[in-house]
Image (cartoon, rainbow, N blue to C red):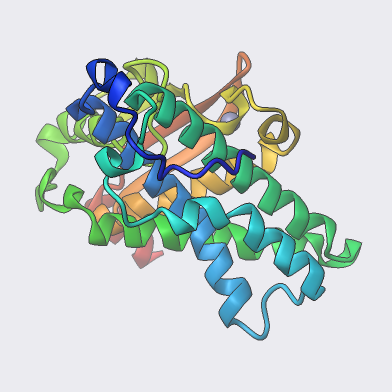
Amino acid sequence: MQSRSPQQPWNSNQTWNIREPSPADQKKYKNLYDLFQITEEWLDAIENSKYLFSLHPQIKKQIFSLNEWIKKNLNYSLKDQIGALTPTDYINEFFSNIWNSQAWTLKLLLKETIDDDKATTLNQLIHLAWRAGFKNFKKGPHKHKIEPSKNPSPKSKRTLQDVLTLLNDSAIANYNAEKTFLIKKERSNEIHAYFLSCPHQINIAPVQESANELCNIHFQWLKGFLYALDPRFVVTKERENNFCKLSLSYRDARVDDKSSLN
Ligand SMILES: [Zn+2]
């Protein structure tokens, strides 16, 4: 983790070199903020819940200092933040800090829990990630981008493609490439796609060490987000050819009616 203050004074000799953040830079920056909301949900639980994560004060302190740099700078716009750095350099540093702090926070929380409680702690973290995804959709500007039809069947393929487009500009978006998903199979009511920016694909050592757990956590964020969009979306995840493959479909209300009769 770097602790460089982003509030560096402008260097007048370098002003020729300064570039305004582009809309694409702003988008990446905002998506990273959204990714940090998962960690923030954990920090809130550590701070405010008597029943979750009873940690040694020293560990608590360590976790909060890991996230201090990010938390301190949450309210500034990207333009105010970058100081003498180029937007790209700033975003790369921000990317590394957000992922590192999330992986280290997870690692410390799991390490400091006694063995029997590890599964419980992980479940709590996963549940909080679901909540972060749910809240992100409810609060965010995504709400008005998709209006799922009350009778989605005739255009469900289009709706599913819209969902992937929406996720392309979200906390779990791919920062290094245009695409977040590589579509493998499409049918009228389901899409199967490789998730190109899941934690298994992030080349940062602490992320790699906890990739299985972190991937499940990000998947739950996605489930919470989709649930807020429309509870009838169904998404599952499995490993295939070194990728995590997501299968997205829309639960048909008529099938549900039938199964509720049984
Ligand atoms: Zn994965």
